[in-house]
Length: 361
Image (cartoon, rainbow, N blue to C red; front, side):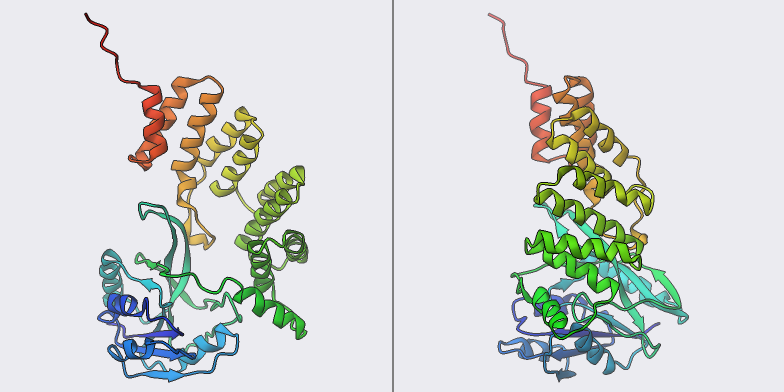
């Protein structure tokens, strides 16, 4: 059986640390915690699980801190978690199954990372991350923020997922502040960091600046395919915010120059036409979304609703607006197959099938 070192970096995480470590402590063989300056009870909580706690002065560099945590690991594989991550019961079982059968020639284990959820706890946003990394195999973290390890060697895609459950918001300006500091110091961002810098600018509503960064990133042609597609989408979002509607649509179409349509993009094109009350065209794109195969292992950001519920419920609305009530009803029932208790589904069903009124007497 493979042995695993859990390697974490923490700072003032008393609200979530016990929850995280309780969900995983009996699954791993060693727990390494690098503290970057906690002033709350984080260290006391960690002490209930491990004695291997190390201080590391924070220097606006997540990769440096994660590499420090990995440097103390002594097991076969290093596993990373953030303090607000947990393994749910089903994922714990899958993790143990993987651990018991993991071949020593595997260099990296990729696992789903669930980071977005609806009001019922269903996953709305997910993507694969490198989760177990062979120790002493020469792979290191890169990137001051949105840090990453580039997988090499034999890669295994696992079934267990890590669930990201924030208890409180983090500093919303931290990542942008780090990027701006790097640029002010004359540092040149690599393609991946350019991409995430553009996203940070977009989140902060700096649409013109974000658009410039994304367009430069795409023009240089050095980005990863999935990031290229996402960058096109963010160009579209920026252009729409700036009132450049036709350019926004063109940026969505640009994604098709990189690969087959993604359901997420088809839904965005559908939304573009829907908002302009062009319901027949919107219906075309939502229907196309339903034909797009979902492939999480490509590594891009996945919105599961785009592969079922969302296009179905939007096709219901489109056909209703077009006067095709029978088709609208049918698509509402298809949406119900994905989310039976969804308020929109129940509302539509009541409209299409009103209760019979007793006219006797």
